Image (cartoon, rainbow, N blue to C red; front, top):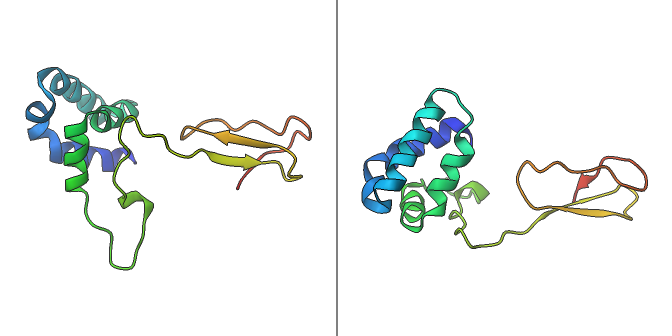
Length: 122
């Protein structure tokens, strides 16, 4: 999710944060939202805070617009729960003799240790 999208979602849920998640989470939310507005790199932390709390995550899912008819966009699926495991993206050597599982978005993918070639997403 891009920072401008995250800001829009955060603003929509802002009035309900303290009710849904408590005063401590609301204070952290406000601090992260202010940092993001200033252009500081707080998007990942704010996203984790919003999706890490069950009540906030469910509220965000209810605010998400439905996909246009006929579109099955991944972005419109429910957000994963904090304890849910998602499948790794597999990368492979062009020679097909080495595979690497990237388990986090933005994770650096190494070169093939045998051929020293960039790995490609499968």
